[in-house]
Length: 191
Image 1 (cartoon, rainbow, N blue to C red):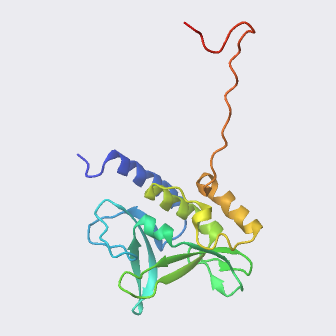
Image 2 (image 1 turned 180 degrees about the vertical axis):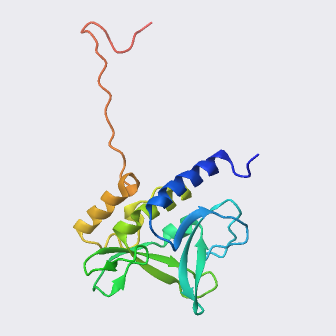
Image 3 (image 1 turned 90 degrees about the vertical axis):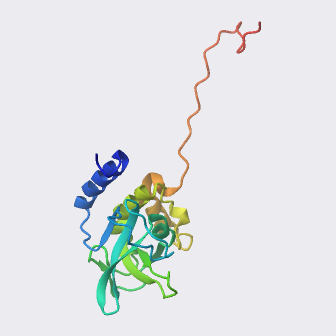
């Protein structure tokens, strides 16, 4: 008997397939291997087998992996437009040019410390963000991201396009065609 349920196994399989397409070595979305990790935002323990998001940060003179619950991670994402070309995407390693859309990953704060921010190109990090949202079991809504309202109309459209179905837009509804009735028939049969 496997220690993971079939649902967890399918999530791991889909994650590993998506992971092979994403080149980031310092960010992961996975099921907790043990019950020893805790959410860097809330301080609450992350039980073994529960989803968690981790990425490397620089802390106390060394690189270390920090973990958060997926919903905590998603709640603090912040969108912005790069003001200059001095930054580098922490997700892909690509330079961030002035005017490009970026997203800030945030971690920390559970023990009163200032949260650490990692700036990433939005289009490079979007597949990872969708995977986190899938593990969290909730759609990633563009309108709910911090900084979305302050973006230009073009950037808001780009975010909604990249996030696709999870952009928070309600699906288009189709009306049912009317039932074909002859002129002498009524819609309801009277007894």
